[in-house]
Amino acid sequence: MSPTLLLNGGQPFLVTGSPGGSTIITTVVQSIVSIVDVGMNVQQAVDAPRFHHQWLPDVITIEPGYLTSPSQTACERMRDKIRTASEWGADDSILVDREKGLVDRANDRRRPAGLADGY
Image (tube, rainbow, N blue to C red):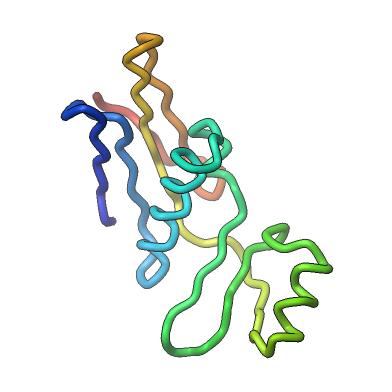
C-alpha cells in the first residue's frame, strides 16, 4: 500500500497511498508531484492519467490520455518503447489546508468503492 504522510511545519499536509504492486511508488509520487509542484487539487491529482516505468521490462506504460499524440511520437523517435494499458492503482488521499481550515479528501475514480477518510 505504501501509505505516505507529508508534513508541512511538522503538521500533516498530505496523507496518500495506493495498492498496485510495482506501480505503487509511481502512483503515489505522481499524486504528490501533481499536488505540490503542479498545483492540482487533491481530486484532480488522484484522477490524473499516470505513467509507469521500471527496469524490466524496458517499456514506458501509460494510461489513456497521459501523452498527446505529438509527445508520444517524439518519445518513440528517441527509441522509447511506449505501451498504453488500462488503468492501475487506486490512490486515496487526504489534503489538509491549515490556513483555510479545510480538509479535502479524494477517492480515485479507478476504484469507486474506495474511501479516503480519517484525520
